[in-house]
Image (cartoon, rainbow, N blue to C red; front, side):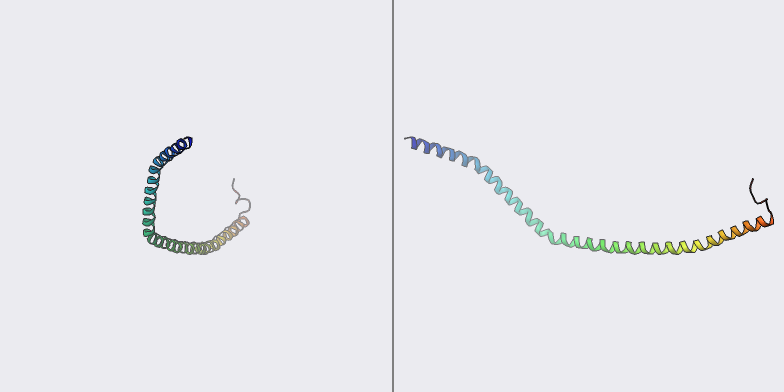
Length: 114
């Protein structure tokens, strides 16, 4: 008799567990179905996404090359301008020095400011 009662209690416990697990299993099933739909949508859009990514990458590479070329051109222009301005400025500086020395020889003691 005790075995029969234990078996009935076991069957009742098993029934309760099954009743409680059915909604969970159904929710998992719905979640898997939604996940499957999402995966299919991503797979459908993936080639376009990859194509756009490659276009963006190519565009960035082209822009980077153009920027590097521009920087090189600017550096060259800077050197040219620097040397073209430096030569006349040095000439002017030498001329001013020469004029100062000449003025000091012509007007000794008067070229100093008070």
